[in-house]
Structures are given as C-alpha cells and as structure tokens.
Image 1 (tube, rainbow, N blue to C red):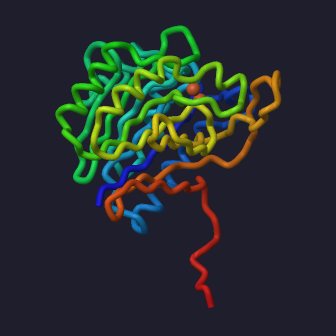
Image 2: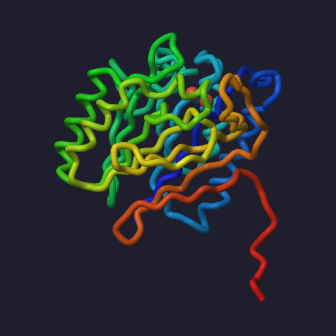
Length: 267
Ligand SMILES: [Fe+2]
Ligand SMILES: [Fe+2]
C-alpha cells in the first residue's frame, strides 16, 4: 500500500533568529522530523516525504543548509518543491546532489510509486508572491499524465488553485489555475491535488477533484475572512498530512506535530 507524508511551509531562518520575530521554525521542523520518525512503526512503511514549498523564509543558501541539516535526521527519503519564499537557483544549488532535482528549468519532478504516481510542480513566480505554472511546467504535467495512462496521480505544488476567503492570501494564489484544471481534466485516473502556502488544513474541490491544503509545521495564517483583515500569523499547532492509497482510493490523515499522551485502552 502506497503512503506518503506531506509537510509544508517550514520557513527556516538563519540560526539565532525567529521567523517574523515570533516563531522558532527550526525547532518546529526538528519536532516534525521527530513526529514522523516516531509514527513510522505505527503507520509504516511510508514511501516518501514531500515538502510543498516555503522551505525557507528568504531563499538563502544558509537557510537551505539549515533545512537540510534538520531533515538529515528523517528516517525517510524526501523531495522538495519551491514556494514564494524560496528562490529557484539557490534551491537548485542546495539540492544539486539529489537525483530528482532538475539541472535546468522549473523544479518539477515525478516519481512512480506502486499505487499512484507523485508529480511535483514548481509554481514559483520569480520576485512575486503569487503562483504561476509556467508553460514548461504545464508541458511537464501533460507529458507525465500521458505516459501514466490512467494511473492515479497525486499532484503537489505550493500555491492553492482556489480562494479560501482570506483576502490577503487569496491575492497570492495560483493565477493560472484554469490551465492546471485543463491539464488534469484529460486524466482518466484518480487525481489528488495537495498544496501549501495557507498554513492551514483546508480541503476543497477544484475542477471536480479534491485539493487538500497542508498546514504549516510551525505557525498558521490567521483565519480571518473579514475584508481588509490584513495578513497575520497565529501560533496554532503545526501539522502534517499522511496521504495513502486504501481500498482503491486516496485518503488523507491530518496529524498534529508534537508528542501527546495516548495509547490508553478504551475500557
Ligand atoms: Fe508559507
Ligand atoms: Fe507561500
């Protein structure tokens, strides 16, 4: 049975600093890695961990180095995608030793697992917060889907393809989402879209398929749907998603990051 874990928006900053002066994102990533490693005996085997963007706060090689050092303790292989806080070339250089990291162009990749394929799409728009799937990425997706001929697909990217009512974030979502919908509409197999950016757990239909937004590992975007609410963070608990293939379909579990007392028998 194929299973992957998704984490998102780790926002690693240079050592000795807090993200936005508030959040120890490195501590949260260390706790995320520990949470995954601790879960594995209960849920394993898990094939892969994917990180759907905003690995770092500013896309510096120092921040990527810190991200990699923290992820080195993870007992699973992982792949990454860029978010609006990342920078494509420093990120490419920082993962140059990874076989799945493209040497040129968008940071798109694909991996075929037993029950479904995972297609990672680069939605970064240089020097902008909103997302775009460039023509090269849309071609990559179209070609990948054609070769998969109906095999189920989990498509991962950073920017949500729909609005969620948080005005400041909706202004930064995936601008050419309709092109994504058109490409996916040709696929006859099941599709689950997963993304990040909103630092919240949100599930919605896009183009008739389920799209699951992953919470961040360290902090949330404040749920405030009033107009002109501005953009702020709230220190809600971080979370991760376990996506699995079960009884012929996709299933996603939300798991809070951290250690909680439990295992108490129901009797
Ligand atoms: Fe983020
Ligand atoms: Fe983002």
